[in-house]
Structure formats: C-alpha cells, structure tokens
Length: 253
Ligand code: 3PY
Ligand code: MG
Image (cartoon, rainbow, N blue to C red; front, side, top):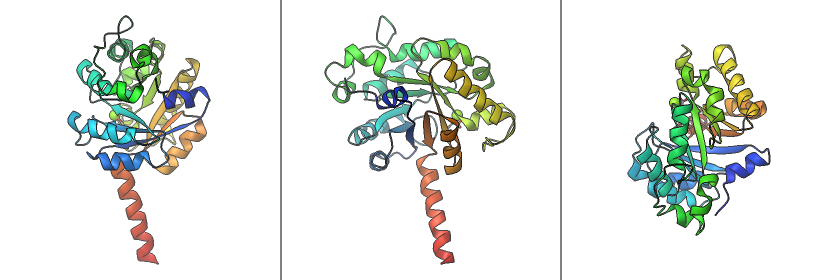
C-alpha cells in the first residue's frame, strides 16, 4: 500500500503542511496540491461543500504530490466510510469530546476485527494499491479534533484510544468554548495555555498534534512551538488575503 506521507514525516520528526479546501472545485484542489503542500484537506464541515463534490477533488489531489484528506462534517459512520472508500488517506473528525467519540471514529476507519468499517474501498484501492485491505487499518491517518471544553477535559483519554494517530486543534471553536471571540488570540490568555496543554499531552502520548492556523504568523509560531501538522488557513482566506495585499501594494506603488 502507498505510504502515508504524514505518518512518514511524523516518524522522521518533520513538520507537515496542509491546505484546506472550502471551494467546491477539483481544479482549486489540484492547484493546492501542486503548491508544496504535504496534504490537501477537503472540508465537509464548513463552507459549501457536500459529499458529492469530494470525489473529483480527491481524484485531483491524487494527481499531485500532496496526500488527500477529508475533514468530515460529523462523527458519522456512513460519511467516514464513504470518504475512505473515495480515497481519503487521512480523516479529521470534528468535535471529539471524549474517548467514546474517539473510539467510534477510529472504529469507522478500521476493518474488523479492530473496527467496523464495511468493505468496499472502490477508489481507496486505486490510490492505495492492491494490498489496500491488508494495510488500511494501520495506514489511514485518524486525527481527532479538540475544540470543546469536554475535549480539553478528556484530552488524555482521547489520546490513549487505540488507533488515534493524534489530535487536531480547531482554534475558532476552542476560543468560543473558552469564552473568547472566535478569531483566535493564541499569543496570550486561555487559548495560549490550551495550545500548550494540548501540545504537551500529545507529546506525552507520542502522538501527532496539528492545528488550523489563521495567518502566516500564526503558522510560523506553531511550527516554532513544535506542532507536527500545520494547516495554512483555507483557500478563500489565502486567495482574499494575497489578492488584498497585492492590491494594496499596487495602489501604493
Ligand atoms: C475551528 O477553528 O474550530 C476549526 O474547526 C477550523 O476549521
Ligand atoms: Mg471547529
């Protein structure tokens, strides 16, 4: 089976960078996959994308050096099965609150006897290779999102769940949970403390820790802090941000 790029980087103690797609466009996903990204994540939770749009995007990402991933809308067996069968090599599950949520997420990602995934990896086998079944349970990356107070409280038990590869921070929801505005202030106060706590817990359990960043500075700071998987905001943000910066510079020229 094709190696999981993010797991390989993590094993070598190297940072992985990810793009995050809200545009329902296989071309945009392909462009991101050719932009020095280690992974491109199709986001089914926020933005206008529905499951049908994910297949052509995963196909497009597969034609690039980046690894295809999906953030599912919810911790649901059917959707997790569908995106894996469509060739996702990693799944990010939102709003994981406790070990039971994490167990049910991992179970949907693994074939029996370890899990309950149903067999039919129509496109997974094309991307993964003919021995997909023998290695999929181990090779698919499974990241649980920590973005609620319950998730924070149960961090250790979530990280202990067999098959969970790591945690991924949603700083917007986590800020809301901490009583802060959703635009994350990671430099001081309760969010800073939460990010440090999550990092420490992940290291203790020798598991990956990733985060969705909302600016270049935020991404650089998370890399300096030692985070393993850094997502550079989303497609709409990057496009708008870079276009606005260029416009400002040109107008001032
Ligand atoms: C959050 O910031 O809450 C996220 O889920 C990132 O998309
Ligand atoms: Mg969130």
